[in-house]
Length: 141
Image (cartoon, rainbow, N blue to C red; front, side):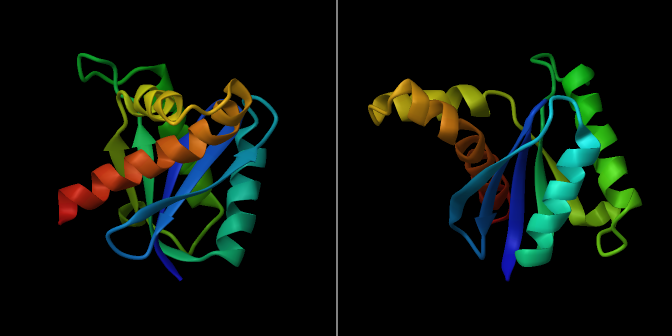
């Protein structure tokens, strides 16, 4: 069982990363129809059925001034949708982590690793989820 699952939620992808302790690993990217968070929730529930975890760490994209904008409201909506159909998890099982700059950091890492644009496109969401999870793990250790 993975102790933690990290999510980088976009308008049409869920980047996932996992950890059983102090090391985060990118997992995969789940794709769904753009803005169809019901479909995203179903794909996540299916993933969790096969790969249970104790806590979900989700990137929370605050504005640069720290305020809550549309993207953070999208995360709040997704969390509500997820919790409404999943009695196994409670609000306290989902931890929001400020994700400002994680996608930019992920792109920089991939550029430095000389990945092609196609490879970058395929890996950016799960790598961003890994960075979110690493940030969380560092904060609790």
